[in-house]
Image (cartoon, rainbow, N blue to C red; front, side, top):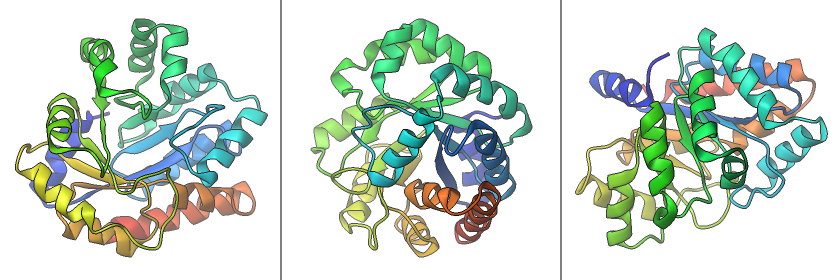
Length: 264
């Protein structure tokens, strides 16, 4: 499996914008998650973000909160998610980025956690409640094990803070399109276009936009505004949860194909 940076380099050489879908591990069950990872990979996902279910998901809106609640109710634990990644990642061309809150990392121990996720085949990590000021230890540890730590830029971030985040983020920079939590929205704030242009003045690292993208039209808008990736979470999670697992898998594969078609 390729690294996140290498995947973006390949896509840039082809003039393509990356598609990064998100699903929650264990929703509705781990076997469906395994099938969903393969379905998204088949449908053209360039990178896949896999959420570790957590009991207090502060950055997540109602759709992903509900998915985490269902996964936890089924007894999904971190070890189950890591076992799943180890089993499925060799069959995927899309690198896996784990999305987890900081508490499970601290509970296991930073070095032990990062060593383990690298060993099972994860390539990147997003920790939405990690403040920039407290990121040095995690940055150093992820670099030690070859994991790319992706940092988030909020639309309200001042320019000096954006500069600092851009310098420390690895793989790509995760630009949050809205203030608030994840969720589907009918429009994406025009402030995002300005932020992408501003960030281009200080970095050539890839920029991925997430939180609120829910349609092919919005994904294409991100590409037209100069983003290197469209990150789609709640809209995928909602489709996977609709109907039977088989119906959900068919729905996310078709949706992913539609999204990918507007990004090439």
